[in-house]
Length: 296
Ligand code: ATP
Ligand code: ZN
Image: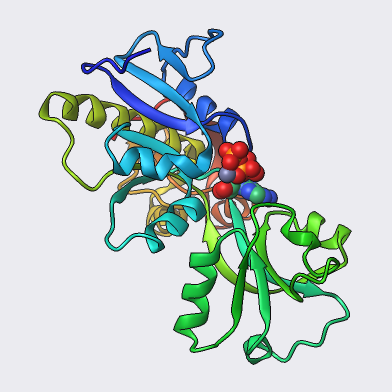
């Protein structure tokens, strides 16, 4: 299929850890993705956009070269790409809050480790050679970075390198291979990117519209709507306790002079401890409700 000039092209991972999460984000933002047999693209039925289904490593290149206006990719893959370029060619326009993982330096549990100095003159196997080299350069450590495209966790056992630098989320893969994490090199989550070069004027409004909807979804995921009752003298303390809430709405309660209802959108997680603190400060009838949609 030839790219249609009037439609946006959004690169997402074809199959892997980010593919279903990327589709879910777009679905939550109200985009109906056609599930066709086409292997390379998927049409969005209710918005002028097509998804390009590609390997995650290709996404920054596609976006930087203008083949796709937007892409969803791991921050780690973007960073690796950027460090290999002479200038920034992609721009992050939203942090997406999923696909969280950490690039960690690791070694066999039995290997001696006296801190970062232990890397001097050593070999480090990784799929992220630019990120690792940059990490070493910043600390003025001379070591040899060995690029592997997969199965990095096997490098110590295969005597390719005593150290590895690999993505970790739960740490289960490290454990299973008798490795322990030593240092955090890069914290990552999925990001929405666009090219550093300006997008065609005709498509700018579409990009802005899509971005607004995606921002709405990411904001909503963490956010809660809180309602509670409180006496007038407790309002200041209670307002200060509401996590990430700006200017709560305060309404007088019917036939209860000096008592008020407080309504607020909390843009951070609301924990049981928060509710206990609110109660201890005079709040009662506390309700925490999910928010389905939000546009700021
Ligand atoms: P592709 O076939 O598209 O090249 P891949 O094998 O390189 O896929 P995946 O393993 O599917 O990539 O991971 C995609 C992204 O998911 C990673 O780049 C990273 O941003 C994110 N991710 C989240 N948790 C983890 C994890 N525990 N291990 C690896 N990647 C993770
Ligand atoms: Zn990949």
